[in-house]
Length: 96
Image (tube, rainbow, N blue to C red; front, side, top):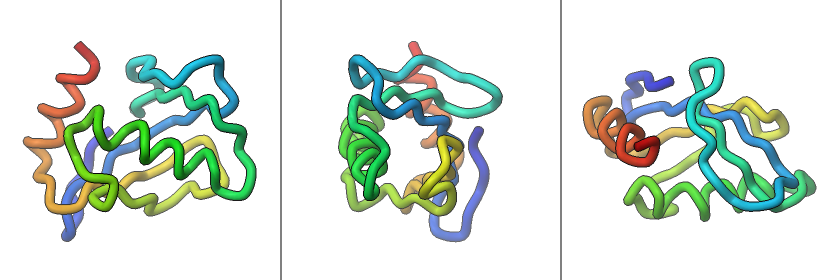
């Protein structure tokens, strides 16, 4: 779920767009499962994902960047300037 990256840490996320409410549903297949109400059109769900997830992780929106999976439900998010240990602690916190 979490990997080292030269600019920070990569977090695997599985997104379910068009859900009834924005929520984190736990871990699924080695990724953080996140439900977003926004429909997956013209990048709106990606923007909503970052707007929803940043405060949950205690990060600024500018610290989150989609590395891969722009048009897929499986995404790799780069957490800029966040170590693996910090990322693990943040994920554990939001899952508890």
